[in-house]
Picture 1 (cartoon, helix red, strand yellow):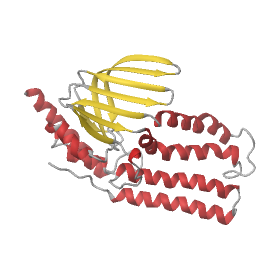
Picture 2 (tube, rainbow, N blue to C red; picture 1 turned 45 degrees about the vertical axis):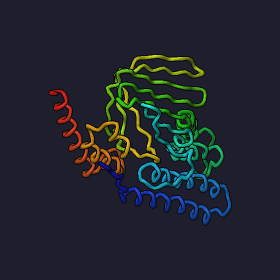
Picture 3 (cartoon, rainbow, N blue to C red; picture 1 turned 30 degrees about the vertical axis):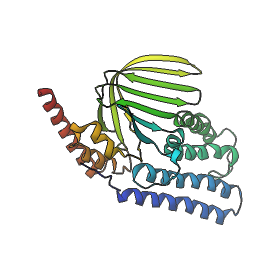
Picture 4 (cartoon, rainbow, N blue to C red; picture 1 turned 180 degrees about the vertical axis):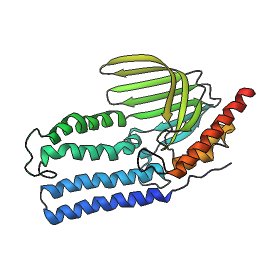
Length: 284
């Protein structure tokens, strides 16, 4: 059974709107302050919005926006193991829209104090929001979002290993009894691995940490050389009948916290079929 990802027009409409907003900010700032501080800031801020739209097209549709090989997660087999490798550049690109948007907002009161509020004084509420929320969030996204990820899964699904290598930190999650399962991410942007009975170890400049994890959800990277629609049916053949609903749900845009009515119906139907599948499996 071959499944193909649907390109939902909603993502293209939203991306077009964000690109328009980015260029509109350029234009307005150029008219109001030609080659002034606010214009140069608008290049940074508007460019961040445009980048966010391109990242959305890259990660939520089949469009290849970023052509570099290192910007793509990829899938391959090694003996009886399945390897999914997500390079640090690919992982950062996924987070880059949020990173640069927060960075542009966080730097505004320090380098362009009059862009949003005229007559702003030092250590205003905008400075405090920047200092205690926006800039720390940029550091957090950069440190975690520039890590490389490697998934190693035995073809019989009896072994699972997830490694991350970042700046000044690394982590490893291993399970020899993973009871491996899949489900749509709670935010609907991808499909997650669900791993049980795992040993987790994290090393960083702040020390080492070990703990036992009963259950862990890990988003599956959107590989392009072999797509999720191709390798997941091979890894979970018993759930092939559920996957069209999973991929339909991940192709639905969310414009806020709540799902659209159509996405909610898909989620309800998927949940119902998953419950039936689990009941049938327990009976066998």
